[in-house]
Each structure stands twice: as structure tokens, then as C-alpha cells.
Image 1 (tube, rainbow, N blue to C red):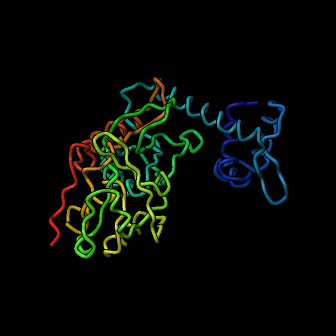
Image 2 (cartoon, rainbow, N blue to C red; image 1 turned 90 degrees about the horizontal axis):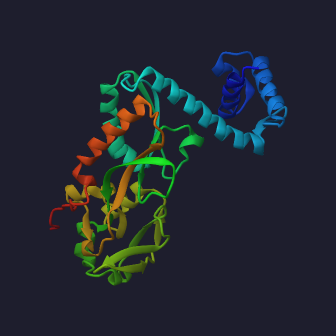
Image 3 (cartoon, helix red, strand yellow; image 1 turned 135 degrees about the vertical axis):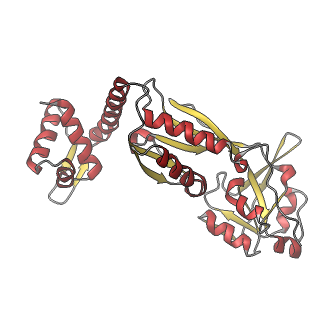
Length: 310
């Protein structure tokens, strides 16, 4: 049995969700795919899939073996790239992930320039507002906002953002400007459902933490919707500084309670640890980090600037 071929076939069946789809992707006959997986199961002494006439699902052993198999194939690919030489031209498919709005506002335009600079690289993006496992999802790199947990990932600092409370000039003219977080109790609040900490809005004064339990009449599951409602003058909300930067710059939104902001949150580009980082990943991390660091909207030393409301 060609064990490597069998593992590659197993991974493809798992990714495609069936033997027929895997056979098409691999340009193999369905019986050949079935034989390869069956031989691997015999070698391991355990079932990797439960097959019925209508579906194929992975067993618990199959799920565990899939993660290990992806790691093995990734290590092999890195070893092959390292054998070619560390100065090889970046090439191949690059798979990255980032938060949705950050991906649209910052990653996408930089990625367009990156692909122009490296014509042998193709890219697949996963913009999603949750932390994903790079190995399980077959990803090369991720852009993450916030403090990183201890892990085996290599992290490159690329900037920082702040949690910013804001409202439209129209709302401020009608309802006044809160001078302290406690005064938010007298205002209409728009709660982003995706915000960490539930209904708690965290602040800081003279190094001391302050917490305001936000009592909001409306909660929204997308940041775009939160921003739209704030632009319409309905109430006060809180998002990350980069998410409202364009609207602050043109005077449509105004940061408030800036003297009570918590410390900046770091932005990192992370990838799997190892000496054999592929040329495409190395080039992407260097390119993306340099461009993000140069963006004033992602600098902790740059306060959001807005026009004075009239």
C-alpha cells in the first residue's frame, strides 16, 4: 500500500464529504478511492468513515486522524519547499483568514497588491468573525485582533486598535454628550451582539477598570447594521476604532468618552511555527505586516480625528 497516497485520498474524501466527489477531484475512479481508504482502514485497524446508501460521515477515530493527516501533508509540503531552497519564488495556493470587516477594509486591497507582486501565488480567503484552527481548516495564516492565547503559532505584530464609543453629531445635538461612562444609563445604546463581554462595556480611568452594564433596546448581529443605525442618529454604540474610522474621518460619526478608553488591542498575523515556513507564507506575512503598520488607522498612537459637529 502506498500509505501517503492513501492518506491524501482519505483527506480528500473528508474534505469533499463523499467518495464520488473525491474521485472527481482526484481524477480517480470511485472504486479506486474506496480501495485506498479501505486499505488505510485495514492498516490502522479502525473505521474512518461510516458509510450508508445516503451519506458518508467520519467516525471519532476518523476525525482525530484527519487533523494528524493534514499536519503530515503540510509538513511534507513545507519540507519539499525547503528542499527547493529558501530563496525560491513564492508560488502555490495561499489560504488565509481574517475578521469580516477587517478583511474587507484592509486585507483585500493589500492582498490585491500582493498578488500583483507575486504572480505565481493564488489565494483563497476565509473572512469570518470567529477564531478558526489553522490546521483543521487547512489555512496558512490568520490575522487576529486581541491578545493571543499561548499556542504553537508564530505571531507577527502588525498594528493595534481600540474599543471606541461613538455617536452621530445629530444624536449628540439632540441628546447631549455623556461626560462619564455612568451617564450612558441616560442614553439610547446600540448593542453589537458579536461584542465580547456580553452587555458589559469596559472603560478605564487613572488605571482603574470601570464597567458599564449596557441596557440597550436593540442588539444587532452585524457591525454594518450597528454603524448604519448610529449614522441615522438613533443612539450610541461601541465598536473597534478601525470599523468606524471612515465615518469619523468624514464627520458622520464622533468618538466619545475617549478619556476612558481601555488599552489598545494588538493585531497579529499568525502562522504555524516551524523552520520550514514556505516562501509564499513568508512573503505574505512580511508584505501584509509592513502595509498594516503603515496605516494610521491601525496605530495606537493615532487618535481618531473627527470634524466638530455643527
